[in-house]
Image (cartoon, rainbow, N blue to C red):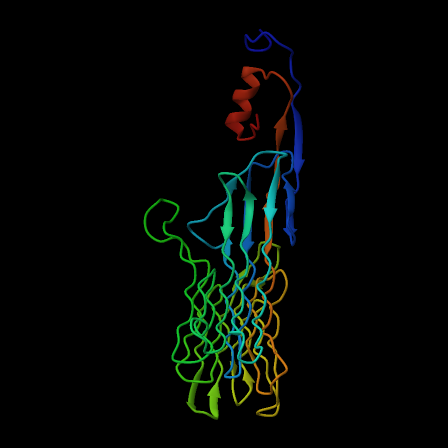
Length: 335
């Protein structure tokens, strides 16, 4: 009867303590949970899009999609299995568009998705950032949709939309956005900024062929999952031409639009988005041919997992019913 009526060995409960652990995945590979982890917090950021380039001023690219369990009422911790390896896929940044005179459209490439806990029912997918618009070839002026949308190259043209999941965690209504739209240029020769995790990209504008204002990239999102505040997923800045003034990259790793201290100063490539922050690439301009220019490459994404500190008791084999009941009441039952 010492085992509560169960035939089997008498177990000796053993206390355990597990420290909180934060793991950053900056490249694709496995992640294994600790022996007693059953739930985790997370931050998932996709690769940023590539900036556009044009002899009229390219757009800035959208940041990679941003998903987190921190500061969001819908997305809480997810349940995981103890001591289990999960596949993590970290998305890369999109290449910047290249303006080979009159033969390519100068539009950037989309960033690629970041997927945490791949191949499982709890998989979390952040969408790659939208590419920025390039030259005035058909279909290349507007920014692409993505985690955040790419900015347009010249106006009037449309910025790409950011990602809005179709349903929230309860299955009704839109879920939390992963990012915001890129700017839509309102005049010729003025590239717009790409969208960021917390703000739209600013539209580029021009009042005459020589008075242009490039749009800055949208701001990213601030997150403290690592223990200190870090800003992720800022949009890339556009570039105005012929003033050759670049818009600033959005806080969170967005690349600035290429700029020259001298108007009409030549071929100006956009700055790259910051690696492992998911920033969008900056826009570029090509005033002097035949040398090609390129929009900035988007920054790669990241996955950050936070496992909580835990303590309790555990034992192998068969438990005494009385012990199981006592530890359940105390809230320390781990099974």
